[in-house]
Image (tube, rainbow, N blue to C red):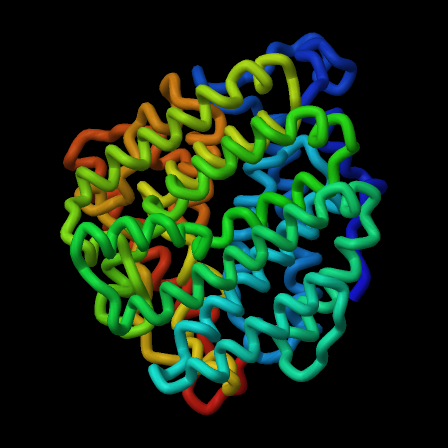
Length: 420
């Protein structure tokens, strides 16, 4: 499928205007914008929402055209996140990144579903993937067909020739790191040497192959003029993202044979959090001056770093939308599994999002991560920005739970009735 269904001329959508319009612009008249201190103004939120909807529409159409491995990748969480990180960009510029996010989710699920004796099968698939990113085309597997079409579209971008060497190098590194992790999850060392090996293969988190498509959709000077610094900063982000992902997913994946995690190497969550902060600070040291000068790729990578690490501190991207209640079973595609409904949490067990996360001095991307987590939870964001008394909170929680039960009752098919 060719690149975007929603292009830069999407009717009625102009993110840059929404994000940069001055407070006294004609559409606002003489009214002063109303917003909470530290929270993005409504016109910026509108730009993020419009971009997220365009990305969601394209992602759903793209996934529907793929093989069963893609049926229940987290399109909602990815679309919201892509828009929150890059709210000034057009759908056409962000779609390559979004589709790679979805491809990686499907690929990762497939790899983790393979049995210990399937190493030869995995090696063959990875070899074919490496051939595809070098310009080949392969229809022998649904994942390869999707990657072939995606790679063809990426290679048509004007900046691709200048970054193709870096792209192939980092895609290969992701494959080899995932291959190492697949083996180490079953038989790897759990000592300090094993920890060093684990961090050396942090490219398994696939941050390189989702950020590089963003860079390829920029103009040449914005990327090529600062490439060395951007590459160094992205290397720091990769480690932070790997560790933050591990903290967020450990509870869900701890009993799965095919999953590796830094917490399996004898380190504490506090140690992991310290390392995340160290690498995030390194990103800021490298990019803050460029971001302050308005270099868009630097701003975007800083936002990506803050957004991902903040979101993982609150939730994880899996299990909220299209992929809720599904397991992934290799070539058979996703299979429905019984899963408890995610109830609206009470005040005492809500996500660890403080009032200051939404309204305090936190960065915009930190707050965007908070809003995304709340949207994935299905909890109205304004409830988290308000701190009621304990008695009011209890009554409100009970009322919301009753409301959500009624909504589920209204939308779920009755016994003997066809589903939607």
